[in-house]
Image: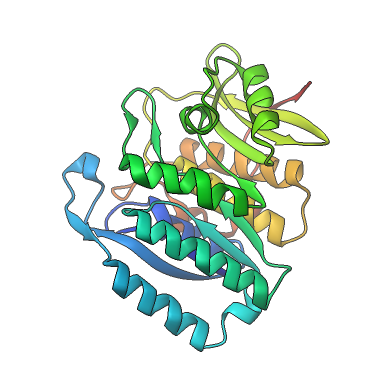
Length: 274
C-alpha cells in the first residue's frame, strides 16, 4: 500500500487540515502518517482553541519517523498549514531527506497562507518561508486563487489570469476557488502541456476544508499513476460530491463517502484553457 507523510494542522472536531487529509488519503487506499503543526479542538472560526506544536517537538517527531525507516518507502509528502518559520524550515529539510532516500516520492505543497476577503492569516514571515523555501521544492502546488495572487504578486480576476500566473511561477498547479461561469466555481489544473478548468455549481454556504480535501484526493491520484488533469478531475468531482452530501456536525462527510472519493460522479463542466 502506498505511504504518505502529511505535515499540517490537526483539528479534532472539524474535517479540515491534515486531519481531513489523513481520512481522505486512507479512503483512497493510501496509508497516511500525520505530523501535526498545530493542535486545535475545533476550527478557529467556531471558537476552537489550541496551540502550535513546538518546533523542537516537531523535529523530534520527524527524526523518529526517519529512524523508523519510513523515508525510504514514502510515496508522497503533503504540506499544509505552518505556524512558524522554523516549522517551514523543518518541512523543507524533511522533503530533501525524503528525496535523498527515495527520489520517486511525490511532493505536493498546499501553500496555506490566506484567502479572500480576509487576506493573509499566517504570520508574514511564515508566508515568506513557504514561498521561498517550500514552493520551489514541490512537484505540484495547490493554492487557492488568493494564495496564487500572493505568491506571484499579481491581481487575478479570471481563469485566464490563473493560467498566466502559474506560467510565471513556473510550477505545475491545481488552483482552487477560480471564477467560472454564472453560479459556478472552478478548479484550474495548469501544466506546461496545457490547462483545464473544472467547474461545478457554487454553494452559498460551504463547510471549511474543501481545499484540504481537493489536495488529498488530487495527491492520491498522482500517487496512483493518474496524469495531472485526470487527478484534478477526480478531485474536483470528489469535492463537488462532498458538498452535495448531507452536512455533518464535523463538516465534510469524508468518512461517510469513503471509497466513493475514488469514484466520484458529481456533475462537472470541463473547459480547456489556453
